[in-house]
Image 1: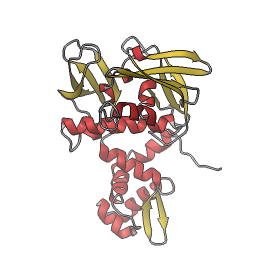
Image 2: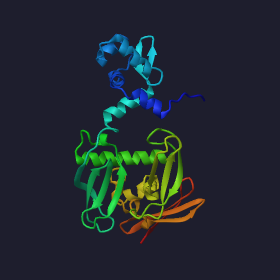
Image 3: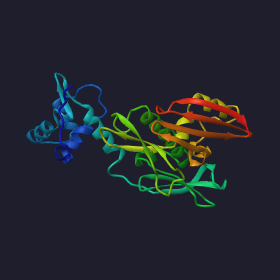
Image 4: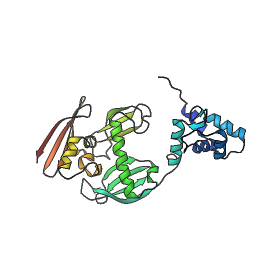
Amino acid sequence: MSSQRLSPAEAFEILGDDVRLSILQALKDDRNPVSFSELRERADVDDSGRFNYHLDRLRGHFIRRTDDGYELRYHGKRVVETVLSGTFTDTATVGPFCVEGSCYACEGALEGVYDDERVTIRCTDCEERILSIDYPPSALQNRDTEELMEAYRRWATTGMTLAANGVCPSCGGKTERYLYEPDNHLPFEVLVGFECLVCTNRSATSFAALALRKSVVESFYADHGVDVETRPYWDIEPCVTGEYTTVESRDPLDVEVTFPAGEEELRVRLDDDLSIVRTVRERV
């Protein structure tokens, strides 16, 4: 496998020009190549020589030239997506606003705040912090707060599933698992963490949140009228507090998670591959 790679300094130097960004954006909606003259008109550059100079700087890594014209390469598409989404340019503060669910500590109502590119959920009564996780500002566009939190739930669940299956939700690179011991702000002794070997993106979640989407756990909750497909995971107590998780061994990994519901509980045992190897369901 061979690859050609720009250094970060080279990439940012190439992109650090308004004309080059306008050229990239001028190609964003086209599935077919665009001719030189059409592209120059869209980018609104009168001087043909000046336009050609900037186009050449983008060719090879961000734009490809074909017999029919010019089109974005994968890197160019990602640059345009990043610019339009405001990932590096936008910031916002929203809230506090009501959030579905109740506090695991006192059963109080929950509220959410979006600030510093993070979603934070707290209890309005005891002020317990339920979660606080990075979330891109583009998620706020065209959504009210209820839609925002539903999108967040789906986004977080999908990202967690990808990372657990060895795929970085940020860049698609390979992830490796590690045990993460959080600070005093989180009610867990240990979480399961994932680190990308390519972009070094890190994420962490509870063992219960991972086990929640296993069929045996879904069926258990379904028997008690709870649909884990639509119920926010922060409203399922074992997912947000370590009280229901016991780490029997770290190497090899051996973890037991208890899921209570009504007058029953389901205990599941996770092995080193994060697979369920034993379940016990009984009345309590």
